[in-house]
Amino acid sequence: MATCPPVLVMYNPVCGDGTAETFFNEHVFPRLEEAHIQVTQKMATGAAGHAGTIAFDFLERYEGNVTVILGSGDGTLHEIINALSLVAQKGVRKNVVSSSVRVVLVPCGTANALYCSLFKPISANEGPAYKLKSLEAFIMGSDVVPLTLTVTTLSAPPSSKQSCSKVAVSAVVTSTALHASILHDSESLRKELPGIERFKVAARNNITQWYSSHVKLLPTPSVQAVEIYDPDQKAFVIHKDSDAHGIVDVHGPFAYFLSTVNVDRLEPAFRITPLASDFVSSEVSLDLVMVRPHRDPTFVMDTIEARNAFAEKSVAVLTAAYQDGNHINLRYSDDGKITNEGTGPTVIEYIRCKGWEWIPDEVDERAHLVCSDGAIFSIVKGGKAACSAAVPADGAEFSVYV
Image (cartoon, rainbow, N blue to C red; front, top):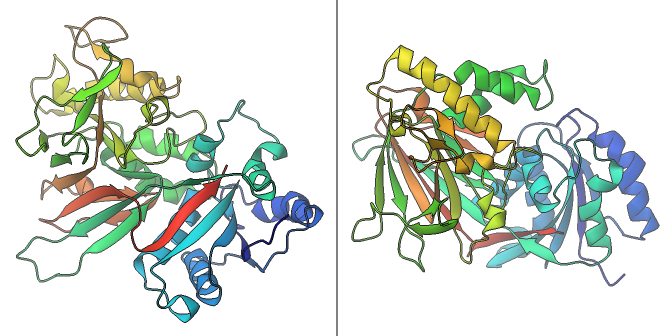
């Protein structure tokens, strides 16, 4: 093999079911030795944030492109991306405008959304060879796929004394509403339920919750408009509510609000944004799925009874996402039943746009939660979250071997 850039091997021993170290010892390290790949540094992460520190220190010591062989889930990759995107480099990279970080993914996490989107699983129980596909691509000198990132800024109101904004960079998912509540609550279930079952338990516990917020959808540069998927035309069309600047104002309450980049699924079978791979965008954008209960023809007012009744429809949406992303085809009948047929309002509003702003109602505490690749943040009272898709102009550029 040709001269290899510096190679950092890192794994998270406690992610997923806790088998990353064993998998690396039994499969990854022997394969690297067999392929005569010289590893520059091997590290196991020791605590939250450690992966970012390891990657940051490694880049400060080596010039040019670097390769990171990463055994983890999406959360550890999130740590690395944020550490390398939000802090200025020193050392040999002090005056370097950007750095290229090429990632070899070895899926050891719970859901492994990015890996499963890049390497579509054929069955629910894939063997070791499936988990080594990105590694094999690296060994064979295959192409890399650049990652689009989203930058989410959580800001306080202008009148606040808290002037500093929080920034989170995502490579998979940015969400509020139900998904953010699920991730917020599922962490306490990790020890008891280390697999994806904990997300389903948290979903059941939050399924009746609605979230009060005002949203602004921001147009993509080339179209200068927000696009919405039309299942009749099986195509994206210009959103009819776009203003003169291409911005769309959307009002809640919301049951679901989630956007992705780089992925069409959040679990091996949970294709929540299937059009990300079925209709690949030609520019930097994100796919957004939202559910607003007032689109239901039987909606009258926000009551406990209404929320309990709508919960069954939310379950139907999430269930259909496991059916190869069929939730995007669901519609309401005149009597509020969910169907795959007819011409009624779509249950899902599937959006393609540059970004969004989420401005939660001050009295709705749960509406203030924001999820960025599993990390949970909270918007200060009177503040907002602004999320935008981007390809890094400065800092590190990330790509994955496929």
